[in-house]
Image 1 (cartoon, rainbow, N blue to C red):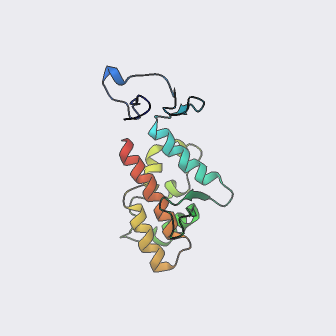
Image 2 (cartoon, rainbow, N blue to C red):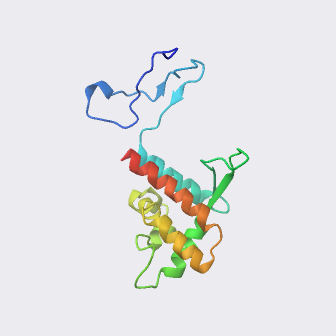
Image 3 (spheres, helix red, strand yellow):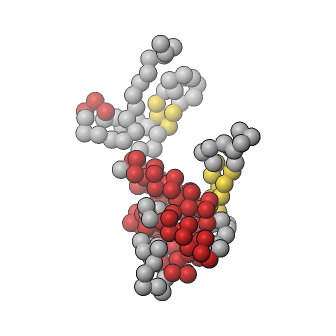
Length: 162
């Protein structure tokens, strides 16, 4: 038996009138002093992740490993957007490409292009991580494995929310 009454908070909008709400702040089920804030716009989140990744000085995004290592510690991993650009540069003039979904506009978006979710989806496509691993191993690109892992995480989250 739970010490509190659980509340179901819809994270993905449905057509049910019971799940409709305009709030984005909800009470924490265990600690009333810690409100929960929800952003329920997956398109906006996807574009923000890609834009923030591009904005950093070295286009590096730090993220925690989901599985702890053998000592029980969670490692901080990093994903480099420059690795994606390098992979694209190696393949852009090829007829057959591993990263067939990625265009020049996706790896070097203009200010207007940063608002385009289709360009963000080119970077975070299902084939992207596998393509990066294949090209990275073949051409010894730096940090390709961690970058591919980050891309997989974003792709999984995207698929869950849409």
